[in-house]
Amino acid sequence: MESSALKNRLQKNIKKLKTYLDRGHLEAYRIYNKDIPEYPYLIDIYQDRAVIYEQGKKLTDDDEPKRIQHQKDIESCLEEVFNIKKENQFFKIRQKQKGSQQYTPLTQDSTDYFLINEPPFKFWVNLERYLDTGLFLDHRPLRQHLHKNSQDKKVLNLFSYTCSLSVASALGGGTVTSIDMSRTYLDWGMENFKANDLDVNRHKFIQADVLKELPLIFEAGVKFDLIILDPPSFSNSKRMEDDLDIERDHPIMIRDCMRLLKEDGELYFSTNKRKFDLHHIIKSTYDVKEISQWTIPQDFHHTDIHRAFLLKPKKPL
Image (cartoon, rainbow, N blue to C red):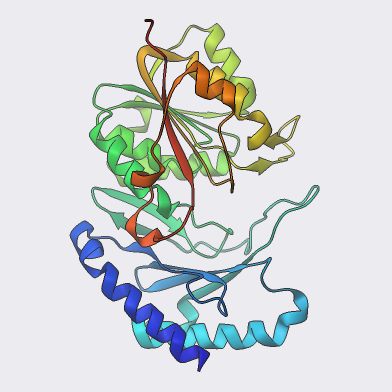
């Protein structure tokens, strides 16, 4: 009975999204977001493949029989509705990290990278090797916005991950500096630039601790027209001297970013932290506008997948 409900939901969702997906010629999108309480999963489609994230807080190790049955139900429904074979369905358990735990590669030897079209962009993804695929689908509207608003602008992308937002800005005519702690992700980002026929030599890719790099950029007197700040909610990477907590650290990060903006510059700040609220000092010091509503795409219906803000320097009265 539950399996038929899941199938019906998938059919209903794809029918609702069809016009949106066809209009954008999208090959990667979210089709299911814990719509049915009995199935606490997220399901993303990537061409003829699917990634299924189990929400760890809902199912525990004691629920193994239920987990096995759920997997069978999902496998059969995805094959029936989307013709996605079981071998192309990738199940991942996303559990809350504690202490010194960090997400690690799921399969060390996978070379299964393939290109996803998100016109006018192309991005390399890998559904097997890491918990995340290399592309945050919920940032699709922001990528489109950056593409349309980066012409001749100097752009700084912090915590750039695989540089999809950098690609959007660069393809829109901006000159982009991407900073991330991970060499792996920066190299991945450079491959994304090449996939979009962008000259990597016209842009900068810097491996660094963002928290340390921002003051150095300020001391160098470098200014930007546009800054993108999308930090993790929490990080205790071994490459960082101190851990990062977005709730605690965002006022300092935002202050350091705002110091790097030109007079008419803009900072796009987003976070996946649940129940996040900007510090009152930030709200009173800068011109702040929440833009979450238009930055969350249609396939993430009824979710608070992220919160996003546009910040500008306050103009003198």
